[in-house]
Image 1 (cartoon, rainbow, N blue to C red):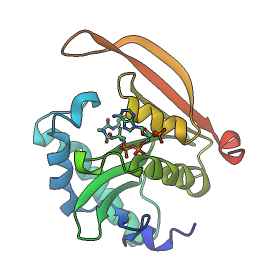
Image 2: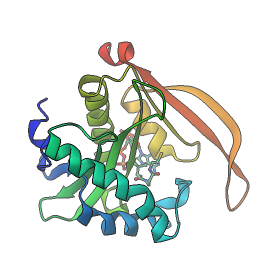
Image 3: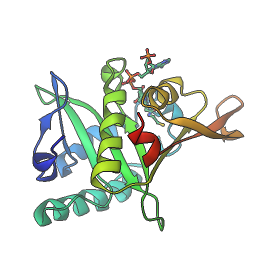
Image 4: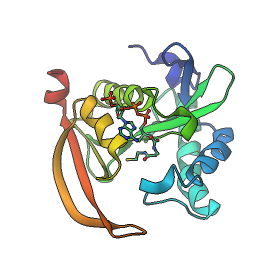
Length: 193
Ligand SMILES: CC(C)(COP(=O)(O)OP(=O)(O)OC[C@H]1O[C@@H](n2cnc3c(N)ncnc32)[C@H](O)[C@@H]1OP(=O)(O)O)[C@@H](O)C(=O)NCCC(=O)NCCS
């Protein structure tokens, strides 16, 4: 797939009724609202949080993205926003560098409740795999999630990721604990899909 337009900061079709584009400053408010929804943040270790925390995390990514678009490069941590054809926010996805490790990336996706159950996470994950392995030179893409987050690990498994580890009682929940699941895919495994 050609990502020329996407890399230029333009929205491209994402299936029949959605578009996807690199993150922009005016996406921030939709993302913050999504993170503050308790149905969305049940399995997000970083949410809910003060708005300043989200801004502190996302603003450098947005600034780096704007510079990368000007330079005709991929951003350091390509992060994308999905919208429907009316511009309604339908989620975000990213393929981000693992600090200090060349060729190691992590995939992530977070959708507002209105976007669940339509295959958007699966499609997002597949696009992040394609960009990671074919555009960014990844040799390994990883992901982790709460064991209770069935939608998340089923998405990874559907996309061909293997479970590579499990940490018992890693996350403290309102009631009890939850395990942390580690998923991964190598470039060799990706090419064999
Ligand atoms: C988890 C999440 C990303 C799933 O997105 P989605 O677009 O609904 O997932 P998909 O439609 O691509 O579904 C992928 C698979 O997971 C299954 N699935 C999705 N949500 C599920 C749920 N809550 N319970 C059980 N299975 C679920 C789907 O049925 C599908 O499997 P199938 O094809 O065998 O039926 C979405 O619910 C979400 O954004 N949650 C909040 C944020 C979050 O937890 N992000 C992940 C952090 S690691």
